Length: 249
Ligand code: AMP
Image (cartoon, rainbow, N blue to C red; front, side, top):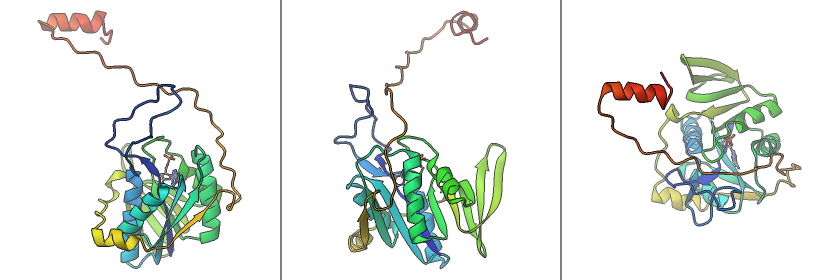
């Protein structure tokens, strides 16, 4: 079974995000970019499936600027067999990504798509669900455990009251949560090997997909500065402030 893993290039999670002065978005110039952390978990899981001989090939795919090649090389250093870049400088939104991924799924015919539950830049948490809907495939989101069976996969999901286990008939789409696994570090020899792995480049037009944005960002603003706290002299003063100033009791 072939496994397809979409990986997104995002601002590194350690970077303090700065809003552009004109409010059109966040600053990405001269900012460290990395693979979306949930996608690293997805790649790790796909590679483990190949190591268990459940998967035969792991294909990483990224949509975006040419620099996404780095993200694909990282996926290949973790263990993906090859990469596909759908190159575009368009402002990509989840529906456009899902449509392009559907076109790739139609070409590549994977048995399973494993992707992140959300990208930490837009926090949309939509692409996996949209892809499953476009393909009309079963979906198991927020997986904290994947258990492959015979033509099926069991997905354990974290829900409000505990854990839920679904059995999906393959082919299917799963999106992964933080607790699924701990991705391995890419070793230097594997980083070197990854440079030689095949990386195909195409455009959305090659896939027959229009990725033009359908939503307009009106403005982006910094969250309000948190006010400094104060010390009160007594419980009575605290209760008074909670009643009259914070109005929470
Ligand atoms: P989102 O719906 O934007 O929160 O993204 C959810 C998941 O969709 C991510 O974790 C990725 O696996 C995938 N994804 C979103 N955008 C892209 C992209 N530009 N390239 C590759 N995968 C993407």
